[in-house]
Length: 328
Image (tube, rainbow, N blue to C red):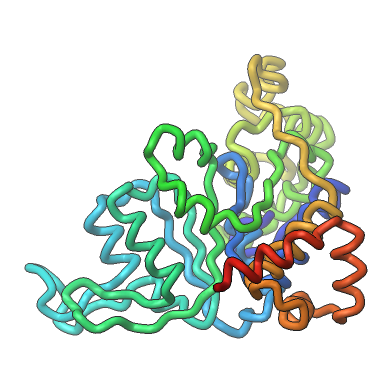
């Protein structure tokens, strides 16, 4: 998971497995919900899904739903026409949804979306049309939705802070991004990557991290995940007075034994194997194509005979008549 670019850095088996799952999900043009703690790099994986899918030639448009007032978030999502409200731009504004048409819309922190706006997003996802504020005529849109959250949306649904129908619409498929502490063997590669980025960005000499400093970074629990590591590395590169970064150049927050295994550090839920992801992708394609296996095979980019074998292998035969009846 990168710093200034969208590169995903790391070669650990866990990270490779998650990347493979992301590429597999990219083949099916249905919504994906990315799950994981703050700072794990969910936007990097959203871009990977975009760039590995059939919409890669289209735009990738990102919007963070957290921290914006309801009216501002509404304008950012749906846009508005000239004169829609006092202070509106003369030319109006194209919303992020319309800007993403033909490509991918990434909605980060979707769990923070105000309840009042959720029905409008649901209507767009179901009807493929938006009404910019102040415009009585709908505009057609077609895009791939990738959403992300660090919340348990099922709990949010139970608490009536998130609509159940929208939850099922945005989570047709899901992927959990692991916390950095669960693939700490990638820390040295990330440190080198962020160090080079900081050196180039600030125009300072490249600094090597001494083995004891690297060991301390690798032992740290990283509650802020990759984003926290990036900030620590950038600060160390800028503040170290020698030609390399030593243990003494790191803060006590990093070198303290308590920082390595803080009490109550959350454990990441186990990630399903690739077969489970493949089964979900096939199920999603069958549902999206209303049980038409020819179209589903085309969407999955596999032969119809291969799809039949996989349907039988995963016991999905009963899903086909259900999908067909749901289309009526």
